Length: 377
Image (cartoon, rainbow, N blue to C red; front, top):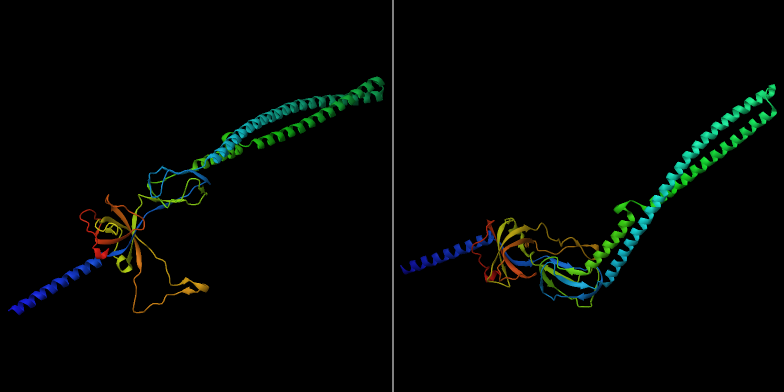
């Protein structure tokens, strides 16, 4: 009887153990986990836009700063002088444009005046033309009468003199008209030159816009001497010192955006097929093994770098040897969005973590969040 009882008890224990193992195996398959997790964040490389010695450095390494706080200042004196020079050039350009406007007005007045003189010259030509026609007719009549003896030679000579004077006056009037027309063409050319020198009127003038752009550029350079934090974050890797030479477009420190933390978990490819965006995730940082963090799957990576087939020495493809009976599952990056970070937890870029994804709890948050077992951390 005792033997039967012992066998039954042993069998029961074995069944329970097998059941627990099966349950855990199923849980492991349904809810994949990885210890290959890493804290990530947006790291902004603070890069000055201008060059110069650092004259103000109110921060220290690993300090928290708020958006808009001054990080460092570059000596502004050179850029202030450049701005003053650009402003003076802008004022000079405005004066030059005013002078050119006066030249345009004077040239336009000259064109109007020559146009009026041309009208008078045309009227004079018409008058001289009429006088010329009349004297020509009188001369022809006098010549006919002289031939018949009906007029004296003196009368004929007077008609001839009147005709010669009228013809000379007509030629003179025509010459004066041509001169005035040429003067008007010259005045119009001078007006066109003055207009070209002046350019577009008002604020659309190219010279004025160029001078204004130079002033604006100098103002920006002066503004760029003060480098401020674009976001709330932590100053990291500060190597600047007072008097150091900051070089334009060369990063001088890193700023970790405090509002951009996320985790990258690298799961075996055999697990990611069941994962979807929105699945509940439990994150346990190695720094805080007893403080689990709530999160959700934000997205799954679409590819990883390929080693086999990459170009190696002598431009030949690199192929790693493999064993046909062993197939190693690749790891796919999965992005985890943290939904509830406890106040006692301080996230640091690069910290490692264990990540458990609850594929059956899509969209669920809140409730008890168990920390990953020590063995899984």
